[in-house]
Each structure stands twice: as structure tokens, then as C-alpha cells.
Image 1 (cartoon, helix red, strand yellow):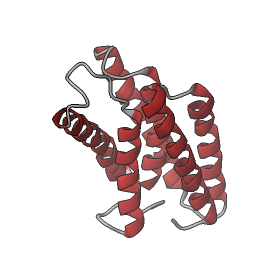
Image 2 (cartoon, helix red, strand yellow):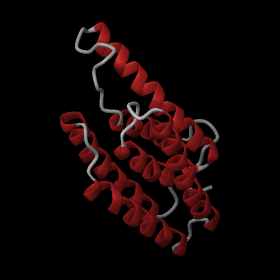
Image 3 (cartoon, one colour):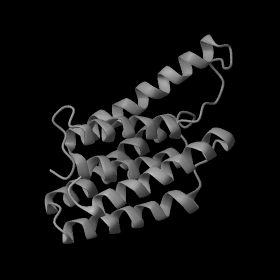
Length: 165
């Protein structure tokens, strides 16, 4: 992260991630009152980051990433009503904003990582006999963990993804 505003934006995502993960695990909901303002707050913080030295191309990629990931999840929801909730679709846009900021590779890997984490969670719960094939499992935490694995790798300099590049 090259500017204090980028760090602030990602710190905001960190706080929101924890709050949403806890709520989703407990109640199987991703409340609009938290998810929807995250578009504006995250977007505004990233705009300010550009004003203070972050590359403008990162902002364009962030907006495109938001649209792409939101659209992808919306398509999945339309194809399988029981698979994803509307909150997951809205959260995907927020995650896409941040992963897009980092780069296209981060967006792709972060999106895939959410499904890998979600699948692994389901398998572990079934092996532990805490779930079966019909058990509803909150997917928001898996999406967020997948995103944060990529964000962490980016900050650590693992792979080719570099924040704001």
C-alpha cells in the first residue's frame, strides 16, 4: 500500500469484514445497512488515495472489478436461487472494488479463493458431522477470507499482485 488513504480504505474493509462475518455466521444475513454504505465509503477512500498519489489506473480497475464481481455473483444467483443470497451478491461488489484496486489477477484469485474456502468449510463441517448436504452454511465469511488471503499475499509481496499498481 503506497498511501495512508489506501491503508485507511483497507482498514475499513477489515473492520466491515469482521462485523459481516460474525453476523452472517450467526444469522445468515449480510445486512444492507452495513454492505451498501461500504460501496460509498470504500470508493470515497480510494478516490482520496488517488488524489494523494495512488495510481489513477487502480481506481478504474477497482470500479471495473466491482462491476465484474457483482455481475458474476448476480449471474450465479439467477442460475441457482438456493445457492447464493442477495447479500452475497452485494458483498461481492464490495470485495470486487478492493480486489480490483490491487489488480486483475487479485480479483480472479480472490473470487476463486472464496469458493475454495467455502467448499473446504463445508467439507470440514460434514466430516465433523456438524452439517449435511442440506445444511445452510454462511458464504459471506468464505468470500471475505478468500479476499483477505489475496490482500495479505499482495501486501506481503507474494505473487505478481501489487497494491495500487
